[in-house]
Image (cartoon, rainbow, N blue to C red; front, side, top):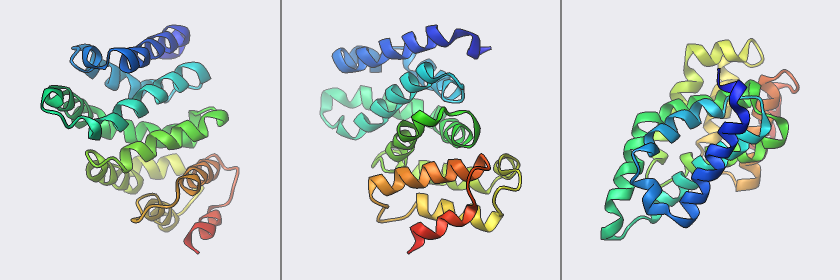
Length: 198
């Protein structure tokens, strides 16, 4: 499986991120873009720090840049990004939730929250991402993932806070994702949600 290729995946996403920084148009118009976003949703679910960190950085960067692609000559790049997220965005949201619940190395809690923030607060993808997250947190798969760590009502309260408008300040959002992760891993009680509702 993918876990056996951690070094290769780290190098792939580090290289893709460099292309994004120094040759963005080449990357965004490349036939590889769709494959990178699709594979990225799987890579964020690994347990090894380096490939997960590289994939999260790349995905966060491409999500965040989409709204900035306003010029006429950038329309094709924006369309390619929108198509990639339409194809794999929901899978990515589910993967981020699963990673928070189980596989994501502790030291990557902040980058994971950053990817979630970028998706949920993107003027381009935010509406769809909010629906994907709400659907994922209300689904049977998420209840299995919870394994009794939180009730449906508590999951709903976490979801409401993640999707809150106006949003929580970024540092509070990061802390909320870290606390959600702690609850799902059985390291914290679900009543931590109370601190964010005040």
